[in-house]
Length: 257
Image (cartoon, rainbow, N blue to C red):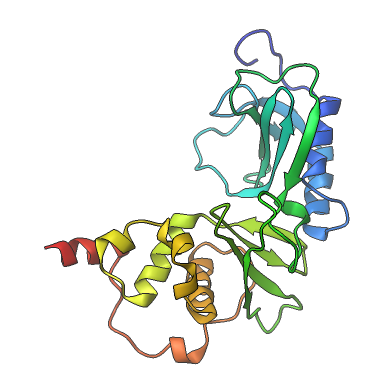
């Protein structure tokens, strides 16, 4: 039982399920897998963000609210006459999947929603415009692992301030946190000026200053720590012996001192 009169477990409503399946297109293996998982699960309670943040699991389970939030697996937005609604599915954790269907400017989603436009990163393919702003993102080919029959493309949208990586073998577009990626880029470039190194927004305003090799290497290092796709080791010319790497913040504070 959650707050108010809501009783759990319960099945997803028809609208909830249709919105979740929309951002999990069935023609892509990685998303189809999650469609099948969701089809077998029940809503077992609310997540940490309250109404609209649901935890899916099996009969008899309680929502795991103590583990760190999983990464976003699929994301989309519905722009309607009644307001903007964000839809997302997080990566499965411990057999549970956390989802969100949350309005940006109202407390709850009305019973009737008049859609004007909707978009999702889940349908993006290399060569297409950014789903959000309809501008062309910067595309950087990333070398996949030798054992992976997959093409991997890093996409950076300067207008939308988003980063995602496409993996052809699964068809999934993984959203990448800007700050974590930018930290690796600054370490690679050995940029210590706090005005540059501490402002992730510079990635987008100064994007033309970074080569594909720079961006590809930063992603390889990020992916090694927070694996999203199967990638090979960085190119050898970037792997030349270096002094042991200090943490990002330690290097910045050392410079300030």
